Structures are given as C-alpha cells and as structure tokens.
Length: 348
Image (cartoon, rainbow, N blue to C red; front, side, top):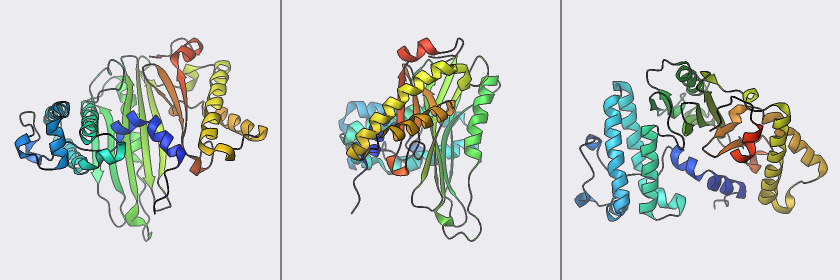
C-alpha cells in the first residue's frame, strides 16, 4: 500500500501549481491526433471523438478552443525549426499526448478543465511565452532532446528554452547558462547493475521576461538507481542591459541582505512547524542553525526567481533539513524588496 503523500510535498505541489503545469513533461493531454495532422490547417474533428479525453474537449468550447490554438502554434513552430529540432518537437508532442486521461487524477479538476489548463500550458511552452513580463528581446524557442536510454546509457528528457540565432550579449549569456544544464549528463560506468535505470531530465519555466530582465526557473531531476531521484532547482537571471548573468551583489548590500534573510528565516520556521507539528525542533540552538544556514546559502542568486510582483527563493531538499523534510520557500513581495535593492538592478 502506498504511503500517504508527506505534508511538505502536498504544500510544495500547491505552492508550485502554476510551475508544475508549465514544466511537467507528461501532463494531461490534448487530443488523440496522428502525427500527420499536426499543422495549423488541421484541427481535431469532434465527429471522431471516442476516448473520455476527446469527448471532454468536444463538450467544452473553451477546451476545444485551447486545443485548436495549440494545434496552430505547434504547426507554426514545427515549420520554423530545422530538421533535427522539428523531429524532436514531434517526438515530444507524441509523448505528451499519451497520458491525457490521467490529468484529472493528478489535479482533482474535471477532465475538461484539467485538459484545458494543460493545453494552455503546452501552448505557452511552444510559444516560449513568459508567465509575466512583456517578453524577451529576441526570439526564444523551446529546445527538446530525448534519448530512451537503456543498458549502460542514461535516459534523457530535456525541455528548455534557448535564443534562436543568438547574437546579443544577453542572448549569448542565456544560452551559455542553459548549455551548462543540458550538457553535463551523467552516464553509468561499465558493469553498473543499475545502469539501465539512469535518468536525467531538465525542464524550465520562463517566470519573467522583459527588455531588462530574463528570469527562468529550471529543474534538473537525476536518478542514478538509488532510493529516490535527486531534484535540483536552478534560476537563470540575465541582466539584459549588462549582457550577463546577474549576481547577488547587484541585488542587495550586506545590511539589506540580512533583513531579507531574517524574513526568510521566519517563513521557513513557520513551514517547518506546519509540516512537522509538535515534532518540529524549535529549540534556540536549532532555530539559530536554521537562520545561519539560510544566511549562508541565500546569497546565491541561482536560488532566486523573479516574477511580476515578487521574488521567490527555493531551498531544495537537504539544504535546510533532512531529505524527508522536503523543499522550503521564501517569498518576498516587491513592496518589501524594492526599498532595499541596489540602484541599477533590473527588478520588475
């Protein structure tokens, strides 16, 4: 019998619901269309609807409209890509379609509503549309790579963004950071008994993009045959005017940073109490260790993502506690952060 989902994991799913919809590689799906019908001129024919998912789409005008939009965007993107990426896009779309009817099981929403949300998220992915902001300077496109792996070879599923024909410093800096995430793929050693279980997955959410700042939240999932996969978050924040990766020293001075770190300490302690209840260690020594750790790690801008109205720091598993304690978050509204920011930082 499956153990109940830990409370911290439930909270993480709720907290990151928008990101999860945008970043899942195999979320609920569209319509069961053959590969040959993916073009801007071909939409799903509801007269042929037979599965629960297809019927749910056809019974909901907004879900059907979302389906038609995705079909259009898919066709336009595939036409614009080179041969290799066009094939990768088609392969990704086929995999995305297979799990359609599991959508409502994962969210608790009606099947039509769930499919519509997933369809809109997929459309945003293919359009490289930011969650917030006016859009990046230059053309961002999704980049896909999949390798089914096997004995002695890691299974790889990559879904990220890159600038097409990058030429400006900010575009080149962004692509360089993305390449760091997708080029360091661990491979099993010869004779490793777990070699056919290795997986390496990378996905991204474009949280904010404007002519001043690009902020991406990336998740790398690595499974090397152990008890569980290891997930690592990594933010990419590009200062467009400077044409390079933004640094924490650009954001806050030491005094301002300590104010923010103090706020994060309070938020994380509250989350620990909510997750662990009476088992939470709130002794002065434990609280001091927690605050010291937060102060020591939060000065890394790779933990920060920026949205339209707030910044968020994500502390992955094992950073602020045992693996079972899970992920912790610190959310800083700009009303609180803006008075502390160094002049020149491109805060939204």
